[in-house]
Figure (spheres, rainbow, N blue to C red):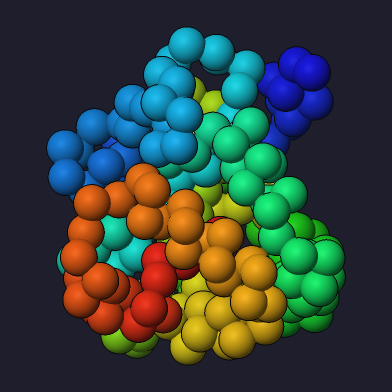
Length: 196
């Protein structure tokens, strides 16, 4: 599938003010590889990828990029119960249709991530939060991303997930990140990185 044609109206280049949100905080540059399969994110210009970053205050404490193929494969490991719970949460709490109608004409990142998408708490009033965005090269794909979730709402999402899904996500984290378990206590979810 040529993603580029399917989403052309939702594509907008990252401006210099927005790049810091979805470039690596460690390098200051765009993410280069998929965390899961190692694919160069420049290799297939038509393959979208997710960038997820978790913050405590203003400090980025966790970040990754994952290509759409790996993201889809990982989602298939989630239980039906968890997939339904996530769909319900995003439909009811994030109110994707309302969010889309309100924000879709806006092609800059800040209004999309200024508040938690689920509870509307201003990002600058949260102790911790995570950002997620879908990119195609250095171009953001808008609607429903980019989005921000505060730590409290992330905890709520984690509580909705089945043991099978939490186990699949934990396996993904342990396989792809070389961090001791105590590192995760500073994450918004206290136990594991954001599931965006």
